[in-house]
Image (cartoon, rainbow, N blue to C red; front, side):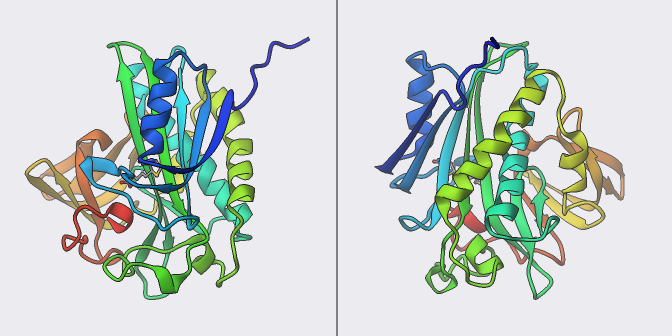
Length: 279
Ligand code: BTN
């Protein structure tokens, strides 16, 4: 008999919560084994990166957080958990929405985006990682992902409509079943996470799916704007490699406030800085 743990160890679907991040963090603090997953129909205080908020009308998005206890994942590789969640969701989303493989992309570090007919990029999903580590190894991590699934175009908030889209919109208005999407995501997360635990990160998948590569970018790092051509990513440290007028820079994902792909992304939505769905 093999000693396989159930995957996920706990899965709860809640109608309304403040944030699924808070729920899973509390589960882990109370000793819940990994991998535990909380899904919500609606969040009243959804959290995005850099202290921003995250909004979606009830039932329009798949909103979830996963709690991990990654044995042996070095602190310098903690970012790979968010990348792993993002890649699992990207594959699941293409399948659940009936999209051709290669339709969806990552926008470094882990947003899921799609090319828009006007030549721009539209954001489908954002990922938020919150880790508690003790120096060398990572103890517990909560990774949250919100993906705009069955959200009709007519209901996009006006201030975000130019930056965001949904799987429903990308697949020509066909309804997208969030349960199918969740199932497809969990089916892909399990082998990807097992591989990560065994020391195998999908560096190739993470690198080739980056829509940033070869494009002009403008990155806000603290008070500084770094501008140049994104020439690739570094799968050892999770950094974006940017060729600037002063030479190559490697920018770590944890330091980034905003990454804009010039020519593909409209100016970031400074009008609504607390609504992160399109940033
Ligand atoms: C981003 O800013 O791009 C990341 C957004 C992450 C949103 C998800 S929705 C589910 C989970 N719960 C939260 O409060 N945030 C994450």
